[in-house]
Length: 83
Image 1 (spheres, helix red, strand yellow):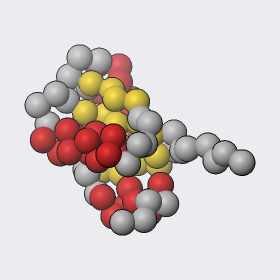
Image 2 (image 1 turned 120 degrees about the vertical axis):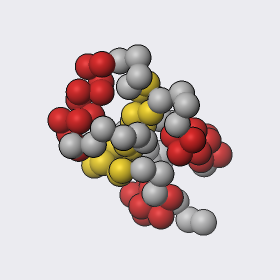
Image 3 (image 1 turned 30 degrees about the vertical axis):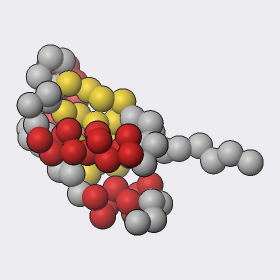
């Protein structure tokens, strides 16, 4: 029996420290994610704004539910990660 992992999208920029921490954390936990560089993709930046009202990154979507910033506790809770 395999459980399908929730869909994870990280809206980020290359220079964002918290974005890089979040992506590193997902890699450590073997969580697959899609990285969207909003500094290079204006339509993605508009999409992120429309969904969340946020201009800052990271914005992490887990099954389309937004997490603003690198909130490890909320990520663990939504992905059922045990510390």
